[in-house]
Image (cartoon, rainbow, N blue to C red; front, side, top):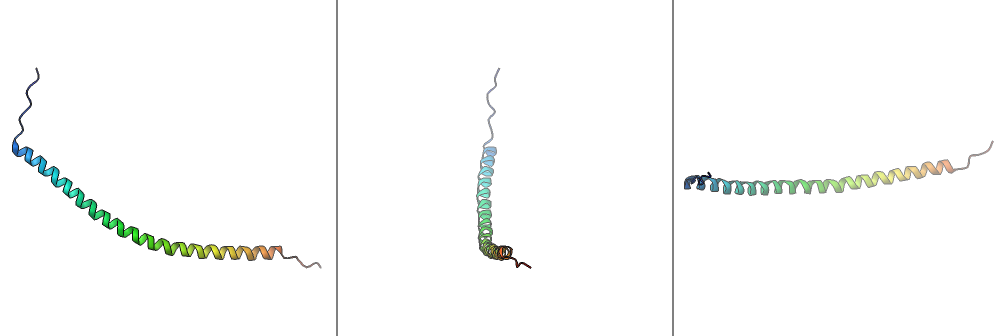
Length: 81
C-alpha cells in the first residue's frame, strides 16, 4: 500500500539548502545591524537618564525645602490679641 518516497531532484535540493543558508546569513546580518542601532539608542537613553535624574533630584530638593518652610510657618506660634 505505501509507495516509495519520491526522489527529489538534486537541483531542488541545492536550491532549498542555498535559500536556507542565504536566509540564515541575512538573519545574522539583520540582527547585527539592529543590535548596533539599539546599542546607540541605549547610550542616548543612558545620557538622558543622567540628566533626568539630576532634574528630579533638584525638584525633590526644592519640594522638600518648600514643605519644610510651609511646616515652619504652620508651627510658628500665633500672636495672641
